[in-house]
Length: 555
Image (cartoon, rainbow, N blue to C red):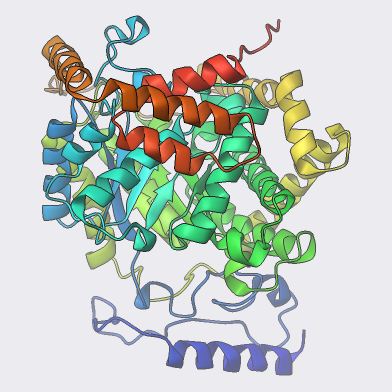
């Protein structure tokens, strides 16, 4: 690349920047020094072809020419506990304190497609998230929160489609035009088999549901993102940064192949795919991971899957700071860890961000801890000046070398996944890797290696194996009482008694009839939800039709 190429790139960037909307804000340093929106290389820098300018292929430096000068990331705090009314109160607190979007955490029975009165739900209702049994709970969850104005993310995969139907029905009941809804549904079933283990059926029925969801959103709710491909849980299970990067993007490629197999236009459906990454404690490695992710996705979508539009090549991602990095020992240190991890996500160009609370290693966040987590993002956004320049670390010898290294590691893993595939597709390799336990073994090996390093003192955690002396006082933590479960079950029984049971039975019967065909399941499932069929009833009917899935035993 010569001087003329670099100058031509700068000219293209300047045109994009000048034509884009920018925030009316002070973009000077604390001392009042003017800073440029972007910085580039001297003439003849040979690395620049792989780095480029913000807002153009390969998007190493970000999707937008303006960076955060145009729009800052969305502060999207993950929250959910107890019943829908309690969580609704927390959402209103988050929005009132400056949060820009909501992210719903569901309890374990909901994540597994079970009703709160299911015997297997005993003792778990409302404990790790909010309990949702029917569309009536969704009505309460978003009471007083206009779904047409707020973007909502829902972290659920196994029963994602019926939960999404409940969300749509709640929006209908608010009088919202559902065709204009905006938000994100996780839906990513591959990562459940790989890491989190919250599935309902075998992979094939889940993929059928996901394909139906993609088709429905593409035609009916174009702004909504039906899939958030999640690396977060892969990393939390113990993977390395390179494994998180590669496994997550491979899962994304699998969903691209699913969309193409349905006859969908990649330029139409790929913009509806978003990503969810972990931001761990190794500051520069995380920044490099995010930059490499954008570059790899853009190249594969263009060169492998034929995407020609810019938006189809864009990797948009949400980030959550690393829950696994939090320590029960000296929990106040978790505020520092979270701030460092959040800053790495911002410097890596995240589009939205959740910051963990200091007490989440012990329990669900208290109101005070949740506010500190929110203020952490706001301090970074409003005080540090990191929003003033696009990709401020671009061109750093270390960051660029680390970005290249992670990209190389990811490509090596992609090649291994394709080797496992009977037909050469990424999807075939993922399914074979799940069946053989390959992904789990790779993550387990990485986790074991790290644990050994901790125990030998080669890796250090303050308060755990270094600087263990402390004057800390016990934390007051949020506890969800048994009365939440009793009340949830009482309300659920009342709702069952008050509904038209014949209508519920007919709607569930119709849903199963559709499940036996190639017809899209979404309309029939929506009708079941409108009749107040519960999550457990919908998922139970599909379990009877498709069967359960048990992970093969391995030693």
